[in-house]
Amino acid sequence: MNPRERRAARHQLPNPEAEAAPRPRRRKAPITVEQVIDTALGVIATEGYEALTMRRLAGALDTGPASLYAHVVNKADLDELLIGRLCAELVLPEPDPAAWREQIRGVCTQVRDQYLKYPGISRAALAMAPTDLETLRVSEGMLAILLAGGVAPQAAAWAIDTLLLYVAAYCLEISIAKQRKVHDEADWVIDTDELQRRLTALPAETFPHTTRYAAELTAGEGHDRFDFTLALMIDGLAHR
Image (cartoon, rainbow, N blue to C red; front, top):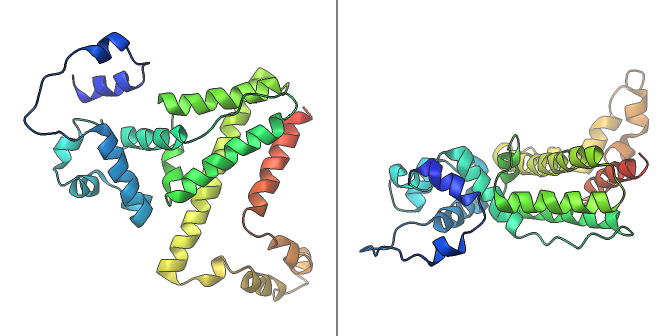
């Protein structure tokens, strides 16, 4: 079975008969897809997503790049496996029409927390056409929640894409800001007090609103802005 056939097989439901079939013995344990994913996540957790290349991953596995291609087709295939692993950690609620807003917000929060464990990994989710079964499980669960809340099918379908895109972008921005602080010593990027001072010091005749509302523009701690944006999007769905 070539790598592309292996990839296609991963996107199909398990076949009990095939699972029960005996497998030939090998003299030494080969690298598995699970080991590839575990090692890749370890690299990202310590060095960031930008450091993850097929060559870097092969080195971490103490093997050659050619060995990896027996398990993954390319970097895009690896990205899908990584996002699929994170999706497997999500707990999806039974859709409740009376609590659908809280439920969809909860799923998005879980996705956020998974992404933030691995700096920059949300970049892997961008422009991805989901075929991994775990990724599809999450989109299926989100769709079920929105439909239970009375959201029209087309609006629900596009809302899932929009919500996940926002979560990915939010997490990626946090990763970039932290990376800049470490490498460029640009503390003001995430120092709201310093940023507010800079905005307030602008010429008021040119930036009247920015100087007047500098506190509002720089307000928020933790995930305040994330919570605000999710509520804004979800409430918009409810009022359609």
